[in-house]
Image 1: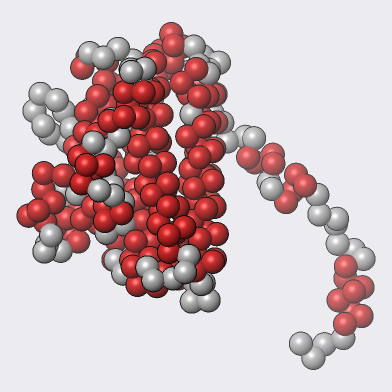
Image 2: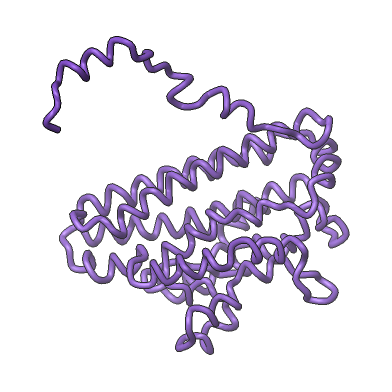
Length: 297
């Protein structure tokens, strides 16, 4: 810098030592839980969702580097995919906190005080999906054939998750969905354009499909697909079954989402990397996991 090094060293003599609590802003972090009711288990609900958002922030950090780091090679591509899968596996395994970790009566009481907020409104989950695959694969299944040549803006109108927050009787958007779209639609479309040619699938197709590591990469991509679109969704489904009745009248406790139709993987058949799966596997997407894990068949 053309300046005297000793002057900078003298300045360090007067600087405070870095502490753990200051470095991770521990006091701030522990002050971010603000329950809206007097039910103790609401704090579990808040903390778990905050932990989930931090994990998705880690996942998006990996995808950003995987997609836009010009120096990445097949080995590092695989390393980052495995990191993503490790985070997803932690999320799936940790969902027992939600399934068995709260008192059912407390949950149903405090949850009704949080309307219309819902975990459905997690923007990072949608960002994760958009950065993994072509947007067409996130369009609701019945609309995909007619959307193949449409613009991203048009595809966005038919993304599968929008059907998960519509009123059963009228088919109209719930307030939960309206709030979510008003806040994030512009950001989602911008991200879809950013990742149109740089999402995980496109990077595999253009750079690593013929690499020596291709077979291992394929298995890792399939694991990512299963963790994201079967096991993660199934964990949510098990939680909903645990705390909520199966009747439409209690759907309000999820913020208005139609969880019976929205959460089971085999109903949505969202698959990030469909070219890696056989037709039979796609036709029965998630069915075996639901049978084994929920219905114990």
